[in-house]
Figure 1: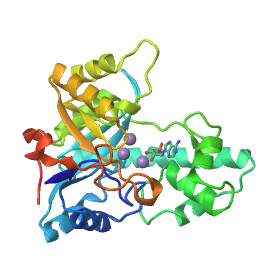
Figure 2 (figure 1 turned 180 degrees about the vertical axis):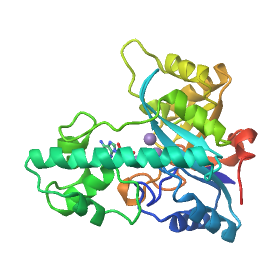
Figure 3 (figure 1 turned 180 degrees about the horizontal axis):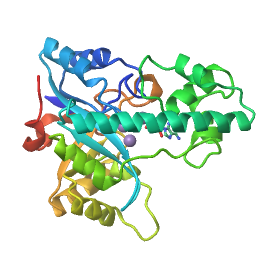
Figure 4 (figure 1 turned 90 degrees about the vertical axis):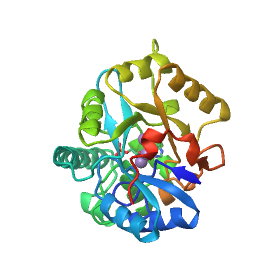
Length: 283
Ligand code: AMP
Ligand code: MN
Ligand code: MN
Ligand code: MN
């Protein structure tokens, strides 16, 4: 029995439709899957219907970008009600923020001499996707402006690169409260990838989020070494936090991250996940 509780579909920046994602998980023998698209639950109902059809356990989820005290992070909401009205309304506003930001990114790319329009990006993205930087990267590659995704981020779209525009997000406190209101548990995504300020440790950051109500951390993650995993498991134990784990599967948008491969090349055994989290599974 294995689980993958961090995946993306065509509703955000993955390349598998929600149906194809659940079918792929099912054929790999994964027994519990969560869909955690960036700032949207638009893929959840389709994924849930497919999970029901296949008799597979499923956790509705979302990965929220957050910025504000105690710092920028990604937060996973797991076991949420995807139809909770204030969640839907907030996600709608975040999509609107993205549309405004995307127009600014186009402006910056044009100013840098790259001929690209928003219609080009939309034409290279799945219908209805919550558009983000990976879609811009794919479009730049398709148009021959760069040779690959890495060059697209290095030259134009990376956090420090010239065409990147910060998105307006929730604060960590707002994101955690929203996930709780929607009935879910809130986890710090991939704490090993956090960008910390000089005086910060992983522990001080996680402690600050715990004060805001964080339920747990993603202690199992596809890019961790055994030492990273042991560190975050110890940290969770020390701070009495729950743990979760996932691959961060994006299909062809992250070709080196296969579905269901969570622990340094191996799957994540379901029994390593806390029962409070497993109890939120549906279907
Ligand atoms: P956005 O939400 O629009 O800011 O886009 C963030 C997404 O871009 C992340 O979830 C990753 O999938 C992807 N991403 C960010 N930085 C890089 C990078 N340096 N190389 C490849 N993909 C990246
Ligand atoms: Mn992504
Ligand atoms: Mn993330
Ligand atoms: Mn992710």
